Picture (tube, rainbow, N blue to C red):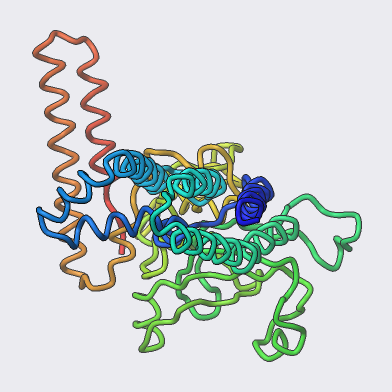
Length: 383
């Protein structure tokens, strides 16, 4: 009977893994380990006991320790691979691995303490299944619903005249037309999700326009309002990307790393070449219709929920990290000093590469010098 229950639980876990495949959600390491208590129990006995106790355990049950030790290493390897993977938001593969490891660990139960261990394994399996079918199932369902809602392809059921497609994309930085703070878009709705009354209260001309969820730059909020703001919900009529300058394309906010993997200087859309701006605070407009000089790159969750806002370049491994943007403990002087150090470091790397090419008689030394200068200029992060 217990074997039948165990097999049924195992199959249910695998069904959930198949159901959630390709959807970004995360299984924590603690949850994965809790699903295999036999390995954790053996591990804790070995770690808590002294040298004599560890030797005694191995001598008394050598085969079991070898098998459980192998399974424990497999679990550790699976967790490490999940942590290091760029697609670690999709935990369906990890769930299958943990389920198989748990099943094999259950078969290692010996006659001694058999009932206690078997009950322990079954209880852990039930807890794991409840967790998967509860919080994680809701997360998977929410991600799928958001993806369907935020596709830029108009559905037949939508009235495109009442709910136009948003002009701007997740990851773009804008300036609020009325209040002047910068913010980065982390989501959008075709109409005001907070209702017509809320839209009227904030003086939006109509609720039937795109609204953007955004993280406002805390530097700007402290300067303008005297305190930081966690998030903003902004009507499209108040979004301005035209006045952004090179010195204001990035924002500072502690939650940036919760939404974005990095920052890319590359434009996401191609179009006709635009003219360059000169003068104070100006910069390149870039290509008409494209993002002005870069954008934040969404993590796996954002890329899944907003499938048409990102392309293959949006997950570039060469993207700049957002750690400095997220670190609000730095004052302006400290942040500027970090930026200078980063520029100097990149300039030195470029110079070293140039010297190596010259010493080797490489005819491409001029190209190397230009690349080094571009790297030094491109490394400047703005407040």
